[in-house]
Length: 131
Image (tube, rainbow, N blue to C red):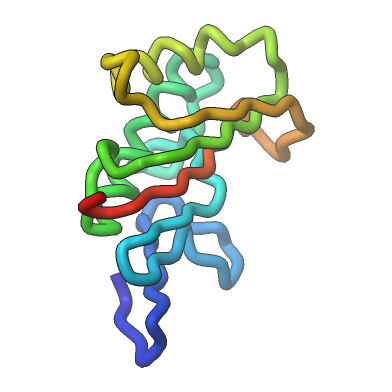
């Protein structure tokens, strides 16, 4: 995590670089917002199988939250973007693993959209650290 003189701090994951001057997320105080988090693995490769890509995306969310100084327990909202709503079950499996308690899950909104390249899914998270 790079420090600046601003109250805002950029958050990055090495294998999730955008190839543009855009961080993976930003933190101000105890509030964290992510950019689009996809399913590429540590080698920068994107699994082609929906279940594997979704599983890796949720692992990247976990790593992003750790890099931000928190955990997935701090997430209050997740927006899921997907190429095909018919692949929703691929998202639900790792979702239920990450958030097994039905009384303590973040809000979630899923949208079907035209994602570029090999992306089948992307997630955006909002979190409040230590909340």
